[in-house]
Length: 351
Image (cartoon, rainbow, N blue to C red; front, side):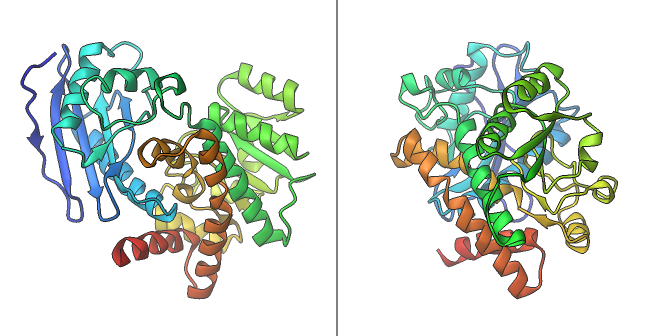
């Protein structure tokens, strides 16, 4: 563990406030923090641990993700800005207490401008270690005073976002007898399948883990599908719940749905091109950072002072947020992706 952690200032693009890096832990893994915008409040965003092929790839990811967090917080109406952290390393073998303690020191040096949380490759337990060196951390287990796993709150927000999307397209929000393709059965995807099945929706599911598919089939009478075939499933709603960039020029022509509404981040490979392709195909797109904001609402509760049950209730706001985005897109004759960004930027600029 480093006694004197040194922050390196990296060259930041126009529009970003801070981009710094530091060597962390006994293996000197590179950690990078990007702060995009703090107009509305301190930047809140998770820490992602991933074996990036290069520092350049990691910087590209942290910049993209931090900008998304700014928009997510603004659209959700939270008094928070956008930031993100990445650590270049393999989460299955490179974690250590010294890594998290140094990461906590790195955050502390930013004096409250950035607040971290769990993300891909990190866990609630990792955040407990980070908290030993800084108070600027959320996403803690409930027994440690946090709001715990954000997955149920994220799934609940997506559920309400789907209901808003059904209302906009079909004139009613009924889930019963509607068909839903869920691509990816992680914690959020599985929870979403459960919520839809409880309302007598018909889940079609796909995941690289066959055990998850079989469990979903057994518990929710879900229809199992191949990971590639799920794109062409004859459904009302396609719900990306795993990797990003899966809505693109190759996959859009295969879609049979009327709505894309799911929890995955960065679903569109090209934000402008693919949003327009979906619009031309008469497929309604629920902008990902708006519909999946329940996870942020959950961890924000630890900063703003509300509990897990209150976070679940607040995630219902996604319903009204999406209807506002859809109506703005219609009125201004722009894609829903552009409308969501405009809604976020108007709130930031008018604050």
